[in-house]
Length: 183
Image 1: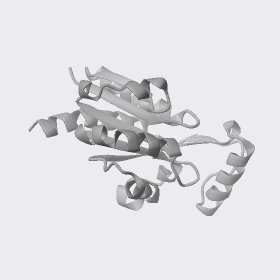
Image 2: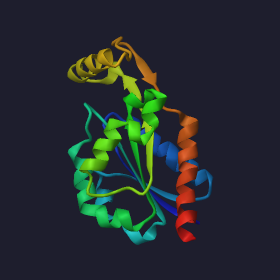
Image 3: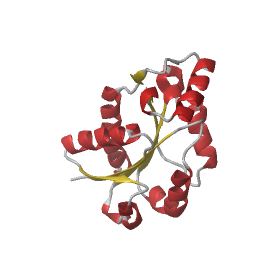
């Protein structure tokens, strides 16, 4: 049985939902999965040799990642790199298919430039617009960004751009990373 570690940072809960969907698909495929929020107590006592593959996901807000993502990576870069690994980036700009290509997604490119860890595998997942649940300042700023990028600006909009079938394909792909490195 393949042991998989799925790590994530979430702000509004959508990245956690995606990480859970990845874990569910991996479990369905017969893997043993540990799902860990990088800011939880569980993240401080990971026994890295227990795993055969690791995926780390983080969301983007205002064009950047939370500082805790880079802090976690700085502390665990060697362990992350020692296993077959993947990074998944969740952002709303990926609502446009061309922005799901790593070379075309400036937020993923920013991550690669700033991260002390170089992921072996990369995935971009479209996020969710949820104006009603966001504080007024987030709603206002994101509406401004959306206006500039021709996205939705209605303050009542709740639009999930995530391709859930593709999230399952990505989870299956994580199991292939183990097979590839075993050759």
